[in-house]
Image 1 (cartoon, rainbow, N blue to C red):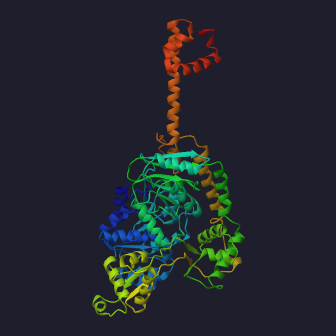
Image 2: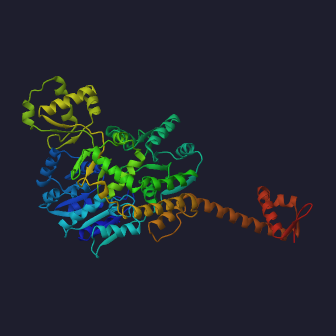
Length: 616
């Protein structure tokens, strides 16, 4: 569908593209963006993904920059300068940047060619990952009413797809292109298991190559990775709370094949450019088929045979249904947590508009004696109600820019040999330092320069104080953004569309997931196709259900053939056939034939004699 989407965009028509995970969505706006005069604005929710796409474009000589809430004022000014000097063809923005009038006023003079909404299911109230900040995209749409909009997502039911078009105010003449979720090379398997860890070992021993094991808790990522490592399977773990440098190092090693298996929460995977994943195993059941499809679809992007395995146990049904209660705590608890968030952030009534703060959720829970598994759902609901934005996937790697020009740097007298060695290492290994902020890794710099890590930090700070560089150390905590000023607790509104209606939607999703894993006996792929509204219901032929049905069909066909053979023996030998004659005629099939004869005896078609069998 890439060509059809590109042609639709080039014709100036609002377009929704639904392409499977790994289906090449980025190319559908990058190609027309290079052909149309003007800037392409790309709205995307993940700051880390935003950075990766901009870096990849720049490597290809394509001009790009970004704005998000985590940038310093100096970084924003540099990005503005880059943008208004015509050095950016693609402008990536996080949705919360569209909330304030100042940003929209700044970009109004730009000639905009196309507006792209990535992960578009986030704008739908009925999408599994609804984010209120996405509703602000309408403001951008109204600023450029004649500019086409391209919305992209990997999975959307018919209901969600229709809602995306409504929320983005598509006119009646718009195009929707939906690629089938079916992939011939990907086999879906459900395995009921009382020993999931050993089943993972068995699967990884049977299917060679790179793999992902998804779990729903951070603690399990480490435990399962250690279990695999003890069985001499190269494995590491990944979750949102890891240090950014650790995340980058582990992801790089896994992508390069140094680590075979990544055990991870759903924080791992989006935007990963690795085509040769042979197996994706789900140790825990996801709460929806949307999430399962997205995560399972990271296997086999190279078109070769791959497997998506869901491990289930009898306890999983209750765990999923209990999740519904946990995800929707009582409204009064949610309102109280909002008040405590404001107190924690030192905000008073009427304060906090457009404020971004570091937010240590562990410290918050400890301060007010709260459980984290109750606070997180409350944060999500408050976010959907428009009171906060909890930015957990905050890109907080260290950044450096040289703020003196080359000639001045050449004549600058440095205060120590360590400073000189550090600066030389930076300039040799991080190109572009004079033009823009560059992400760095202090551990790597220490290795390259031969300096202790502590000395690297110390000298970077010294050079920053001397106004030679601007050094932004990595931040270790997520962020909390307040799009509105603090309100009194009694005035906080948690509407039906945020609470009751979304709870009902989540309940339907959970039951559909349970049906897929426990009740459904037909083709696994066909079940998902029906869920996403596809009308082609042919069985895939290679999921576990289809393979088992083929075996049953083969056994039935074999039994029918054997019954015919028995009747032929009776017609040849006469009404009575001895056991010796049966053994001579059937050989190794004798036991199966005797079983058929016993069934025929129950039906009153034959009877057993002293020496064999006789037709009735």
